[in-house]
Image (tube, rainbow, N blue to C red; front, top):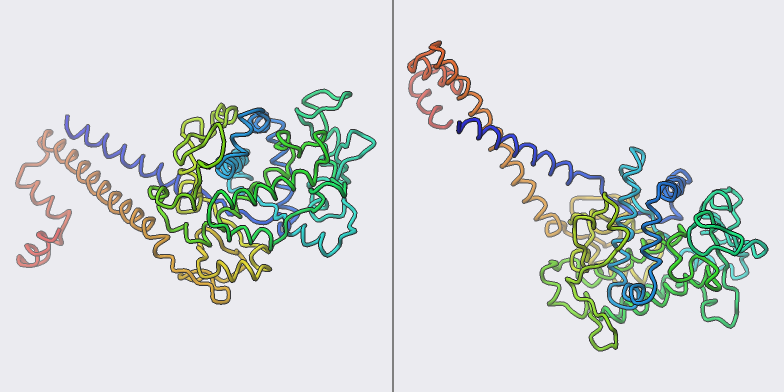
Length: 456
């Protein structure tokens, strides 16, 4: 009958509300700089990355990035660059989170390359294997006498302890080839200029057109790859890079840079639905450049083998530049970044972006926080705009939840009363008395009863 269907409907509503609550309460993805992590947190990444290698998931990511020709050019030479790699990092992070309870709240660290750049500026004669990034559980440079296989005193990434599928030597067999690196020490190569420092990265924010900003970051990104790969015999060279753990940490930082630039210029306040109005500053189709493929805001990003993973987001959903433009905690992506030394030691970026810092995108877990934002010098940001919609949505869920519960209780009581009436245990007059007792204090005088009953 109708009551039974109503009960089924209300139970379905409760299940949906419960599921939605679980989805929205997923641990946020707060990404922290690699050089500020504890050894325990670094080892969590190392162990997880190697588990993804052994369970076959990393193969899908490495194979997707290994595509050649136009497929590779589309994601590196067009405006897909930032957004394609942004999802690549996010999905890798998601696969970490599926490794078990220890990884349920895993957040992808980021390798702030400017930290190592500063080290090099201050210590230009530093031997390669003494660079901070090479002394932090990510393995060192390669052995020139052994296929440039990574030298690792801890044995984590050395030959026999971590295998790769691509870039195998003549005496190696996939998928058990060693991880290879060869730092570029050629003084005639522009790549020897090394890693971009804080000033160089920050100055890219002055390019208001997205295309010009991307070109500069892409240039510095390419130098990082060549810094660790003299030629295509090393993994960080071109399309083999995804098998090197440095790759995903580097692109996690490039996402930091993209988000910081958007925040700095106020683009964090733009709705995704209105991004067209801000082209070519938030996005650029490169219409003035000869390219065979010119992506738009709603062009579907292609992740090939990654989307064949049953648990991958793109297995069931389309990813576009518009959809992943804002990956903050205000969206389904739930990403935020630790400000780290790139901000804290960088007066230039503080002067440029301090008044616009969005504390739902960036914050330091070590800094004092207040309801109006993170306090750091004169940096304050009203969070009402950022959280307005989230608060409204939460209120709607509360109201709907209360309504469902009230209706559910009403139906249960009515079902019980109908059942008792059918058995002849109560008559209508007695039913009225029972109903009143459910909602009022029977000992009150008549006026109070009438008032209270009406209120209920």
